[in-house]
Amino acid sequence: MSYESTTHKLNLTGNEISTVLYLVDDFIEGNEYRLSDPDFKSYVDRIYAELQSVTDNYYAQLEEINELKSLLKEGH
Image 1 (cartoon, rainbow, N blue to C red):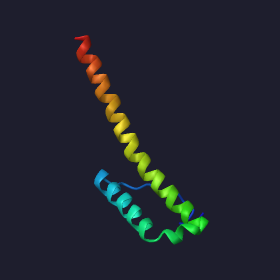
Image 2: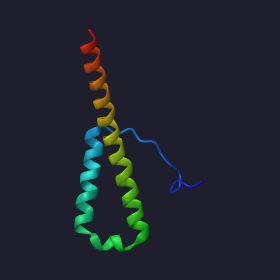
Image 3: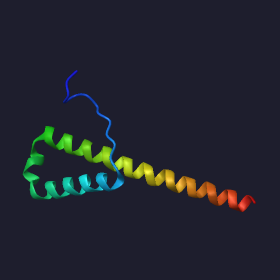
Image 4: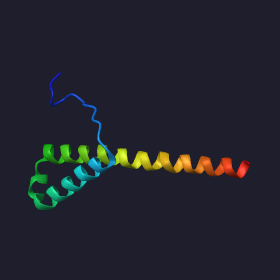
């Protein structure tokens, strides 16, 4: 198993994740020619999807918690 193929766990804040996503977007806009390399595009797509899913999951869980709180308030 190599560093390159091992899945690593990271501890990033929401602000840090947003910063990385912003930088990826900005880099891609300025280097669209690099997307013609299928490996590079695959890496970028996977990184973006992984980071975006963390953000999406956070807000989905927050919404679920708020809905449960609302239901509990209605029940009392």
